[in-house]
Length: 293
Image 1 (cartoon, rainbow, N blue to C red):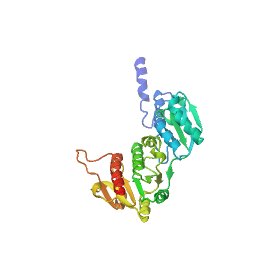
Image 2 (image 1 turned 45 degrees about the horizontal axis):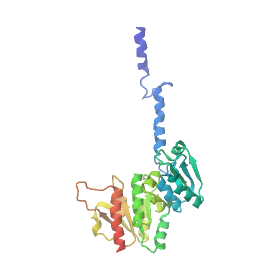
Image 3 (image 1 turned 90 degrees about the vertical axis):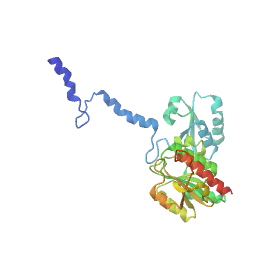
Image 4 (image 1 turned 60 degrees about the horizontal axis):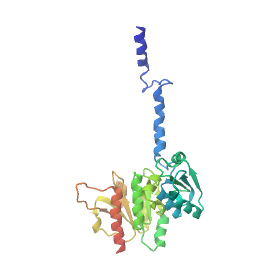
């Protein structure tokens, strides 16, 4: 009977999910640290900015950052990387008087994540400007302003892809919300293939107020929406700001009401819509085509 009682004793310690406290030496306590470790590895975005928002990685990203006017604190290079792979970066660092340091793969992974491609750099500040600077940039080029407004785009891959398209079509800036949206982090920078270093990006606290300010300066606000007029039949000439909504819900109701008109992409296949970055590429090139005529 004593042996049976000894086997049943652990059942008294099972309820650790309610008010009962788990034993101090309970092994599952080690798993309590796993979520925290998971967060550090994937560097999720907070409402403000990620811990390493100013660290970008990848050879092409670093090269474009060095070629642009980005203020760079330091470049980091893996110590076992081939000379032919980092020769151009070292040359650019010396040309711009940017310090560079060789680190072990483990140290570089701690700084820039595991997928760093052997090269990373620390920017002095994220490439955020004011909306007024974008308007001034367009005026300085004697061009009607073309801005892109992103309404709660959540995926940094989409943000990076749209920044790349915006640069290719000659846009003067991209506007994103400060909260509840993808920010200009390493993932967005890498997806932009270096375009982040040249494309002005502004973060605003209130998109609705920003749209009203743009209207007061003569810009037309166009929303990309499935219920809008086909982009083949819209007039995109003149000062313009094009709004693209979030991946799942599209443009929010308030922002849609503030648009001067809506535009859509004709779809012939079984799937009714495109990914937001693909849709942005189609519409923005229609805009670029109209502005070249």
